[in-house]
Amino acid sequence: MDPTAGEVLRAYLAEQSNAFLAQLPRLRQDKPEAAHKVRVACRRTRSVLRTFRPVLDKAWADGLSAQIAALTDVIAPERDIEVVRERLLGALERFGTQDPGVLRAHTLLDRMLGRDYATAHDATLATLAGPGFHALADRIALAPQTVLSAEGALGRPAEQVLPPLVRAEFAHVVRRAAAVDPAGEDEPWHRLRISAKRARYAAEVCVPVIGIPAEAFAAQLTRLTEELGMQQDAAVAGEVVLRAAQSPRIATSTGFVLGRLLGECRAEIARSRRTFPELWSGATAPSYRAWFAEEVR
Image 1 (cartoon, rainbow, N blue to C red):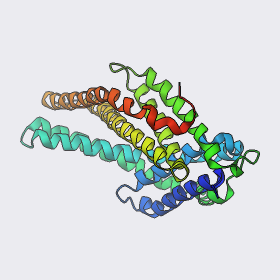
Image 2: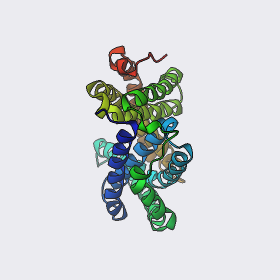
Image 3: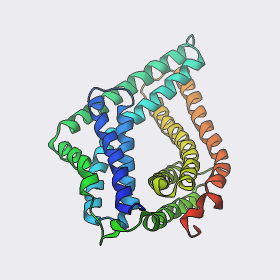
Image 4: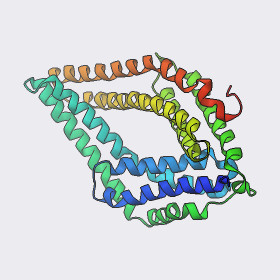
């Protein structure tokens, strides 16, 4: 018997709930990647609630989504700081360890990002200790069992219900892709990445029902979002370098090194944007979207 939309969505929510709960002890202990994995589970859960909202009880979906958003706003900085620190300090090590400007830039960034991380982790721990978090953890744990349907839509066959909603989600990606400019600001590219991730997660939800076509489409979007992620990481790193360069009484040699770092960040962004047309062509190939049933325009 073909699975219903409710069965497929409950299974996916259960997978994300388990991932979320498994990482909470590690997050409290400040273990590597814990903040990232919690954030991913939250992001995937919110994407399901957003993409498949038309077949869910809207008050239930919106309420849970808002609570998860409040949590991820708190824990997100930890991961961002980890990524930026690894990127910038690694680049400085490549510059060499004998140059005084490099050494001072390394010390400046290490101290600045260390303070940022400590502040971010303290905020995370405070949130995890609060009563609101425990209520949210309970809601996430119970979400697969308590998911509510909009007018019985979850009881219909998944193969009929889910693909049109993936198509609608991907239409947002198409519109945002049309708005990016290779020489333009970073924010439209970041918004495109967010939309592409939502479409990717939506396709992954459908893999148990659609099979290889949905899996292949998700793989194309994974390639795209990973490249856009590298671009976003470089953009965030560049913002950190600019903030470091505004430190008072900074030495000329240190400023020069920070300028080199900023140049590397912008070069990485330019490289990433040059790869976009090829990746976008792959993601939008008609053969990967045939299971949508209708053309995305």
